Each structure stands twice: as C-alpha cells, then as structure tokens.
Image (cartoon, rainbow, N blue to C red; front, side, top):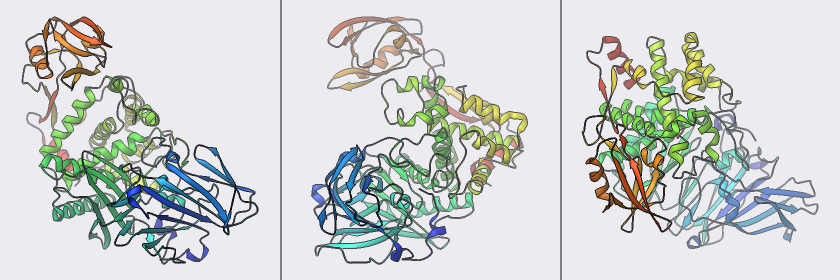
Length: 609
C-alpha cells in the first residue's frame, strides 16, 4: 500500500476509468434491515486461489474491532458460475478461482452501530466507513478503483471521494446510483460516505469548497454553525499557510448522549449530542471537537508517525508517538478557538486548569509514560476499567499538557522567535504525506532541535523526563514565562490542607451506593475498600450518596471512621484513617507585577502573532 495526496494522482474526473480493474458496489435496498449489500469485482487474477480480506480496524481509532463478525451470505462467482470458497482466518475468505481471471464476490454487512468508526444503516440514512464494508485483495491495494453507491430514490450521497461517470448503469429500478473514483484502496477507506436526506451546507475558504452534511436535528443555529466552522478553517489555514486539499467535507451526526470524531484526509465525521449547541459551555465542547478533528488535516493525516501509514489493516500498527498525534492536536483545539475569536482567553485558562486538575488526580501518571500510553493504546485506552486511573494516563490529556509546556519552553528559550507552531510547520514540510513519516526514534525531538536549537540538551532531557519518563510536569516554570501561576484550592472553599479525604468515587445504583473506583494513593485503598463494594453506613449510621460528602466534611485528616459495606453479599466493617484531601480546584492567575516580556509572550501565545 502507499500513501498519497490526491493532488498528486488525480488530475481530472475519470482519469482512471478506462484502466480500473477493481470496482465496488454498495447498496441499501431495505434500509430497515440494517444490511448493506456489497459487491466487489476484480479483474486480472492469475493465481489458483485469491484471498479477500476485510480490515479489522479503522485508522484513527486504535483498537482491533473485528469487523468481519458482521459479514454474512458471502458468495463468489465468475461469469455467472459459482466458485468454491472457505474461510482461512477470521477476516479472510479464500476463493478457488478455477482459472478465472475475473471474479465477483458479494456479501452483506450488518450495520447498526452508530459511531464515527463503524457503519450505520436505517430508514433515515446510511453511513459507512470503508474498513467495515470493503474487502481487499493483497497486492492489489495500490490500484485505482470505482465505487458505485446505490441508494433509495430521493437520497443524496456525500463523501470526500471524487465523483465520476459510471461505466455501466448498475442500479435496480428502485435505486439511484452515484459513482466515485479512488486512487487506491487507502483513499477508499479514508473517505466515509453519508447517504440520505441530510442537509448539505457549504462555504468557501481561498476558493475551496467546504461542505457540512448534517444528519439529525437538535438545537443547532445553522448560520452560526457555518460561520464558526469557517473561522476554524481560516485560523488553522493561517497557522500552516494554506489548505492541502481540493475540497473538504464535514459529516455531522446529531444523536442522543453520544460523542466522537474521526479524522480523514479531506473529510471528518463528528458525532455529538443533538443538544450540544447551547448553553455556551456545551457549544464550546462542540467547537473544540470541530477544531480538534480539523487539525488532523495536518497532524496525523499528513504529519504522521512512521508506523501510521501505509497501514496494515489486519493487525495493530504500533507507535510511541500518539501523544504527538493526538495530544498535540488536543493542545491546539481550544488554543486555536481563542485565536479564532470563538473562545475567551479567560475561559481557555479555566479549561486548561481543569485539564491539569484531571491529570493530577490520576495516580497512573506516576506509572505510565506518554510513550507507553501511546504504544499500549491498542490494549488499554479503549478498555478502561476501575483501575485505569491508578495504572495509566491518556495520551490525549497528558500529551496536550506536555505540548503546552513544550510550546512555552520553546518560546522562552528562543526569546519568542520560535514556538511549537514553527515545529509543526517544519514537520509538515520535512515529512510530506508521500514520505516515510516521523521516525520512531527521536524523530520528533530532532524536529524540535532543528527549529529551536539544542538548548544545551534541554529538550533531550525534557523528552526523557516527561515523555519517555513519568516525572511530574513542571507547570509552574513554564506558565511563569507567560506571567501565570497556579493557585490551588478546594471546591468547597475550605483552607487547603484542612479537608479529610476518603479517596474513592461512588455511584448510585437503584437506591444503593456502589464504589466505582478507589484511588491507589488514598486511604480507602490502603484500608482495603474495593471497587464494587456497596456502602451501607458510616460509623453505624446509614448513608445515602448525597450524605457521604457532608458526613466526611465533619471530619478532619487523621480521624478514623468505620465503613459498613456489602462485598458479594457479605457484611463487612472496615476502619479507614482519613488523609488530607488533595486540592481539587485550580485557577491560573497572573503573577504579581508581570514584566513586559511576560506580557508580550502571553499575547503572542494566545494570539499566534
């Protein structure tokens, strides 16, 4: 497989039509069944048998998802003659071609999972990611191909793929056909498709069309949504100096209590709660998602770690640089909203403080490094459990805070002449999409030193301590460069050091209080309280969820309490000696009498100028 930029391969509509030897047809004749009907035709075969493989994961979502479990009614034929086939692996169908050079395989895919990384089909729309529905033949993935999409009458089709004229009319009378061309299999999988009666909005930046396809309804303000999305595009274009695609498509799904985003080279799918557009804090989260996923146009889809393309679609693609791909992107998502005028600087600092509080409340920060978190994403990030805060960290969260510190350190050590912005621009030029990607061993460090200088080994030491290691992040030093300091407190406004702490979280379940997690650095953990225990009483008196915090507020650090609880229906009485509660509230406040250099650097950081 190869990576590419569309501009390098596709010069006009239909360039490859006369040479295409692979085509796919995907139809949805009965949407209410949630079944896609897929047909793949391939010419030029010569081996006695051919393997047809369905990917096991979707790039951008680092988890083996075994999409083959949704395939049914597989069939193979040539010139109307059925061919023998059998499965040789969970994801592989081997067809005995019997000397045939042209083979057609057909199958159905059950699609009833509404996420950005899977596929969904019902009476209201059809949405699919290529990895979930399109098989491939090894050694034939670099060829151009055609995609025919057959939809019920009245439905439209929106995707980042380039439309072209079909070679033949393949639609049944009740279906409509739209045809697209892809430069190779990678491009096919990198362009999700939305079918239905969705609203289609558009705007232009630098003469380039940007479309927003909206499925579902909520409390969205459409003119504001379009205008704010355009500002996000403009401010990110300004950072990188241009837009690297011919057109771009935002697919936006509005549903209930869902959230997610998945980036692609010239499109994105974002799934949000339909009521995400007000109040203001909810809308902030939506804009941050739009900003985050669009930033991936550069960071991940073009500036990428070497293992992230060409892809092995069957197995894990390991990298220690997800912190740079996702964490750096998370750092910029809100920061660029400030630069776009969509988020107040004061609010940005509040969100930044919340992120610091979240990381500092996770004991796992002392155990798992950013590099390890990145490498182990396949087995940890998508499988959180009650012990996850004690044993791991998010490469999104800690990666964003490490990016903050890197940015401020670069600005300080170059007297404001360079920043992380410059590092990203350097990476974009040095590691183009058609190249091998950023080397795993010190590639990112080398880019920083190329931009900001070696600084007497400072950045090498920074990587060793905060990215490969688990040292506590030096927030105070970095934030002081922009005239800020950390002011810790308690949410209930008691003096720091005076609050008693149990060190666990609870949740209500049918009138019962269940322990959901226990911090490994807290007193409940030391006393032997388990996640899953049902709390009954504190010092012999029944407690409800709302009462627990109030009862603890009556105590002081060093007091010993007795918790009565059920563990697997056995009544236990467990003594716990309370500890000093760690601060749970943080404000980033100006230092006393900031100097001109601090004020200038703060303005430069927040404005990008």
